[in-house]
Image (cartoon, rainbow, N blue to C red; front, side, top):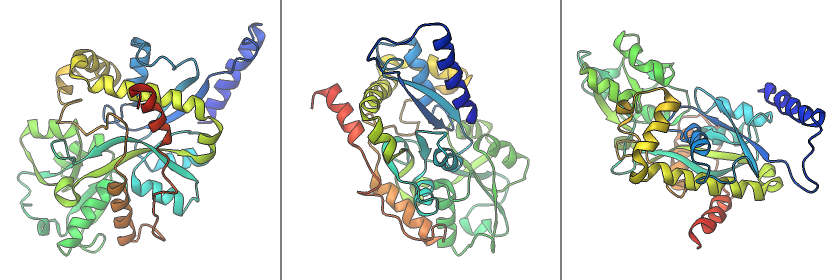
Length: 343
């Protein structure tokens, strides 16, 4: 991450050496460093590509702000990155944000939705087993190996809650291992684990193979999950508010453009270019078979709070953390939406 600072310094030095200073009174675009994990669930890399292909959709990018993207395997590692100043926007799960507040004492704010799992009519995380495993009930997981993307993540908490409701305690009755989402399917097929958490597109590949089955879904356990949210430091918002409103105006326009059925072919072409997947393998994207993305970027804070309460229940937090109103600032997206919709 420190390479980012070196890159910015090098570019600035190059401009000075070239003898091309900005016009008097002109402000340099604000560099906004954003973390993301899995596309197209995380729309961020797609929106960056959209800005290059269709600059009229996101007219402020490159003018009042620029975007720099950083890939992470999950939400939790982004806590360290934003804590040390190497990220400006961290894509965190509610439980990860609560840890950042309670343990790292970061003054963060929820500023936007990224995606939600289990919204009625949309995709929900699937927890899958091998069809020939003999696992047909939750109780059958006793003595088995349960995979989670990150301990303390939304998928991890949901699985632990359901298993505990059925009398199974992690560490005592079953083993928990951390495996990145892209590796879940192969680990399950190779019998290295007995329960895998699947999200699109990996769940689609699993169903196509026909040798796996869904034991339960996230929606069946907790209903709607505000799986990932964007968070920012309060002082960064205060220092750069005008540029951030420009950014969110572009962001909301971009999200709506990707979700618009009229742009579907072009949106899938962008998704294919970014993810390197075939368009036919992305047929689920931006439909009800995908995660829910709020067209106004509004997170469901009630669902987020529910997950934090679960974290306390499992001893993953030293104390309860209440998000609203202290750790929530939706004014950026509200101001941006007023610009777009006129209300």
